[in-house]
Image 1 (cartoon, rainbow, N blue to C red):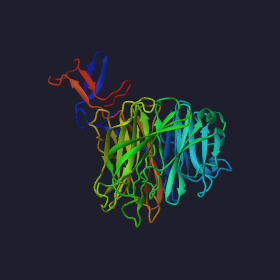
Image 2 (cartoon, helix red, strand yellow):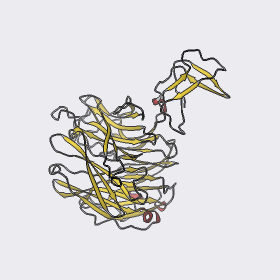
Image 3 (cartoon, rainbow, N blue to C red):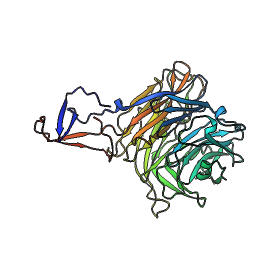
Image 4 (tube, rainbow, N blue to C red):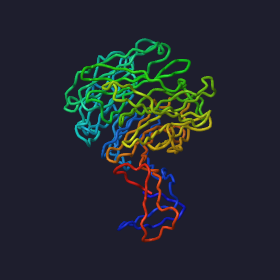
Amino acid sequence: MECVLSAASLFVVMGSLTTMVPAALGQDCGAALDFGFEAQSSTNPGGSDCVLAVSSSHILAGTNEGLWLFDREGNQVDFAVHGDFFPSPIDPLSDPIVRYDSESSRFFALIMSGNLQDPDIAMAVSKTSEPTLDPDDWYFYEFTDLPGKVDFPNMSVGEDYVYVTWARLQSESREHAVITSLDKADLIAGTTPTPAAKLIDPVDGQETTQYFRAIGCVKMHAQPSSSIAYLLTDSHAASGVNTWVRLYALDASSNSLSEFVLTVSDYNKAPIKINSAGTDGELTCHWDFKFPVYRNGSIWAAHAIGPGDPGQEPKTAKVRWYEIDMNGWPVSQDFPELVQYGTINPGSAVSAWYPAIHVDDDGNVAIAYNQASASQHPAIYRQIRKWYDDEGALRAPLLLKQSESSPAGSNPWADYSAMDEDPEYPGVMWSHLMWFEGESTRKTWVARTDLNQSMPLAISPTTTPIMRGTYVTLSVKGAGPGNLVRW
């Protein structure tokens, strides 16, 4: 796909290669490379917890209502509601998670099962790399008698193990968290593994008046060892300034857990509700890390935080993102450190929340999120940064989808959003977030963003005219090995 520029273009001969070079160099052509399609559509009240997993041929999208399988052009291949997909006696509830594991070429799906008073975990693993949503194409597992009430589950897939976390209700006002490892070879073979669980207590007494929601499972691109996975949570102080995030490393081979408290720039807790245009209620806002990513030694993570002034009205949320160099911890003797961070703040009375973040192998980052205010219905935006951009900087936001209304009354707005990298096209990210069409139709949007875009092009010589048949040097800043350079 080529960018459409108003300036004239030049044809330059480089040896035997003829190529078209825009005369307006360095222009950001990002918008032309975004593509999206509708996934879910429903008139049922309630939010859509958006999840996504991408294989070399298919996109698996999920919400509280079901699973959708698409090709990469956005054509629906298959669909199943959870109650038809997961077999009896599994009784699916909500909070779906989907992952694609490039190493085994399998999809993994997870959902809460049972009842709200005492739910369990149900899991499905595809038997092939290209399954349909026919249950015959999947192995199914149900894990019961889990410690505590299950809520806000999460999952990541490593080299040898699958890691699952959830929040555990300890009392009316206090939650613990559970980190569990499952043998991946057993899951792929159709054999039910025995879970190995670690219980995480609330820390520093800060969760006694606020739920210790959950621990985010980090998507691992390579691991410090084949059995170690990273996990991440933030501080939930009910009042006052938060100054840390907490990192965990679970070694599934020994069921041992290491933890490290990382000091970060101050942040206030995000509000539980934020304003949106045209409603008599407010939209829900969770503040947890949901789907962090580990790549090339660093964790990239994003969560919702509150305004700098906790007493500000109207209540708004902002998106804070981090790059954390793990320094080989805990295998090495070094400790994690904060490399950079930034805040998405679209305005003093505007909220940005439910971020989804991913990073490619070159260190280019994409973040998709919802945005709303008293004068704007919820919208879907995305921002990117190239690896050579200034520390903590993101490029200008791009609107992906604008809602036409907001949910009325107390109907919630989702719990989380998701992003995954395309294993077939490195640097291409797919995101999945919720929006509203008309007055009452709740929809979700899957968007494709190519991080190979926006590579500034320089031509040498620059002081003499470039004529047909002359030799010039084209330098593309930010292009990694094997990147497809578009202009």
